[in-house]
Image (cartoon, rainbow, N blue to C red; front, side):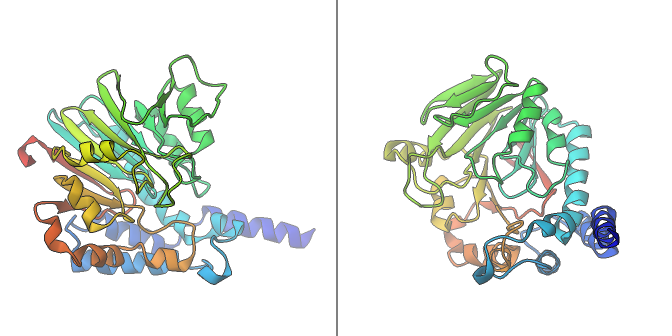
Length: 331
């Protein structure tokens, strides 16, 4: 009994205690300039990677950390701080007319907000925290690209539905939620566009990370709101319909591309956005190798190999919880 009590107290201690080092890393993230990426931010990315790596397994010993790591690991300590700050900003900030603001959350999770609307993409609580779920009352629409655990969160979606929000899935997603009222859940077919109270959404069926399986629902979403066009890639890589891919890549009017960092320089250049934001950085709650391969330096080095292809495209590397604003004067 004494041993069990000691174990419980240890877990409780680690759950509530935030180490000074976590607070210092979060403070440094909050005060660094959003350059692309400066030496200071590259160094900070390395510091964050080293800090996150504590307790993670190596790839040859398992793909994910133990359940205990989700409770006492260092990742949650920093993320609760940075994502909590982002949640407060999303709630409190008033976005001016003709402007849009983008917040990076976890993996491909993002929130975009204009003067009229707020939209969430792939919001999921992957580390036993309430921060992500607290975003549901701050958005108007939630878009889900596919069913992976770090993109699709059943409890978060139930909460959004109870709050009267609309949730958008790719066609044939097929999940049933008792909490949903008529019209709250929308499944959109590839190549089709729907209008949700002034938010236009077009879906493009893809595979998952180049696996070539187009039977599982996966989608890129093109969202038009407030005069801006935002493209979100989820984990998609190859398009099911060539004509849809050609149509999308020939538009040349995308303002912001929220792009999975697995996409190549050529993939981003083909879209030709004004701003590209590599996401799925700092692979959360996975192995050490995945974490190392998804930091600022590794990803920026990958894109710098063919830097000339990205001429005219502004690349923005965001830490979790960071944001940037974009407006008509920047267009």
